[in-house]
Amino acid sequence: MKWFKVDDINPTDTFIKKIKADGKNICVVGYEGNIYALAARCPHAGEDLSRGWCKDGKLVCPVHRFSYSLENGRGSTGQGDYVRTYPVKISNGNISVGVSSFWQKIKGLFGPDDSLF
Picture 1 (cartoon, helix red, strand yellow):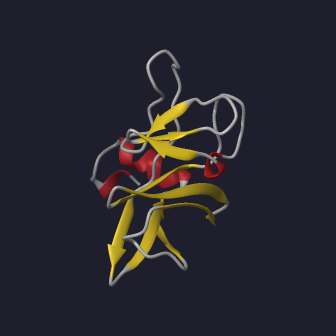
Picture 2 (picture 1 turned 90 degrees about the vertical axis):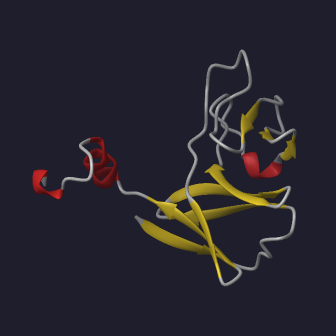
């Protein structure tokens, strides 16, 4: 997994910021003292989620008001969709977002045994 530093953000602030990491647009969110990272594109209509807002632990799309859990990316009841989430780590006050390559994801399907590859 590659880790990408998110610049110019205080981890204790409330914020929504879009970053580009490994060719992916990622929405980094500071909400109620926690940091989350989700795909920045709404699967419903393709809108930029970084233009939205947070409410009740969800990131709300600014166009059609679809909402996605900050914890796991699941859409609200009745939506039947989700956005991808990414791991976040904070070290020495710096926020980093982890992005796995396609092959790392495939490898993870087979467990931690590296002898398969």
